[in-house]
Length: 279
Ligand SMILES: Nc1ncnc2c1ncn2[C@@H]1O[C@H](COP(=O)(O)OP(=O)(O)OP(=O)(O)O)[C@@H](O)[C@H]1O
Ligand SMILES: N[C@@H](CCO)C(=O)O
Image 1: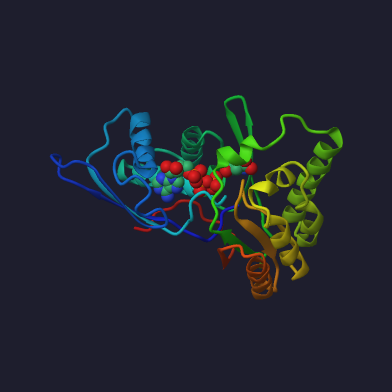
Image 2 (image 1 turned 90 degrees about the horizontal axis):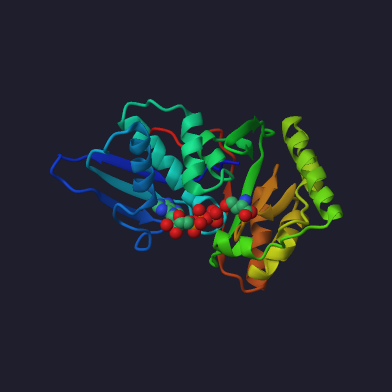
């Protein structure tokens, strides 16, 4: 699901003799690569490679609002933004579907890039080399309240703690809830989210990486959130709400304070927009 938090990328064509330049401000400043190794720049080059062309010299300026390694899809945003910028610069030959396939190849999986490229809530299934994407509508007035911890969790680490085998009852538990989640969203029954966001497949195993997760989810649900869960592979805890956003935000912050967990609370909402041109 795409959220209304944005990285902005400015691209300027340079004279032919100039070398590439990448600057980063905001999230990841002083940490992300400020050169052609930067993922935004590499994604732009990827698109030019698909076109069979060499990318012209450009300067790329990234202003980032999406925190890194918190389960908020920062790398997916970097990839989809780079691809959208390069597509515009090169004449816009590729469709959003093409961009999604490129983005999934660069990211290695389509989980986050589907929403980052297409916007909205996207169901995505990979079958061999084919990606099936289905947009799912989101009930009106749904908001997302985020607790974004200081602590980071690398996706690879969050995947390494998952078991290699699952019990049939646990698999059935989650499969039924995925169906309920999609049906609840598509048929405007946000109240199904309470049950639909329960999980037995990843959160229990990931909890040791961020022990406060359970408490934060409980605080959000007790304060009136429709459902609360780990965003992506963590560390952010995401609560979906319909009303009571400020109460949920306050109670999550309070639960964090009581357990001495550093982080920030943010109230945002889903957006139907994916990576797009501003001018
Ligand atoms: N905004 C960005 N600009 C350029 N490169 C980025 C950006 N965000 C992430 N990356 C690159 O992607 C790599 C992997 O990102 P990482 O998985 O840590 O973050 P993430 O995408 O926020 O993760 P998550 O899956 O938790 O949302 C980083 O080491 C960095 O090289
Ligand atoms: N959905 C993935 C994370 C995608 O970044 C996971 O839970 O491992």
